[in-house]
Image (cartoon, rainbow, N blue to C red):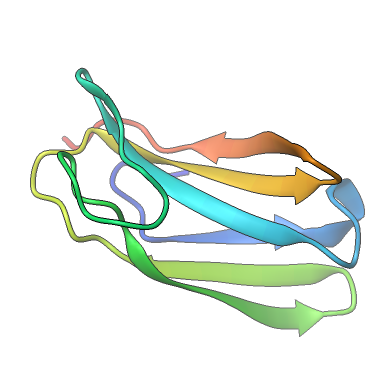
Length: 90
């Protein structure tokens, strides 16, 4: 993913057709929560837009000015797996 990206295209063949996604902002102090604002402020408005039967486009709002990137994750059962991390803003 590009530095400070606020969207990510997911190939559903890697995660399955019925998937829950989550996202967190991250910086050197750690990661934000997934459901409320803190430092860095949690992203909001995560939307999953189907592009085809095998692909979904994720987009979200960046609510932080001090994050060094984002982590995109998906859920399989009770476990969460990282799909991608953005790099630091340049």
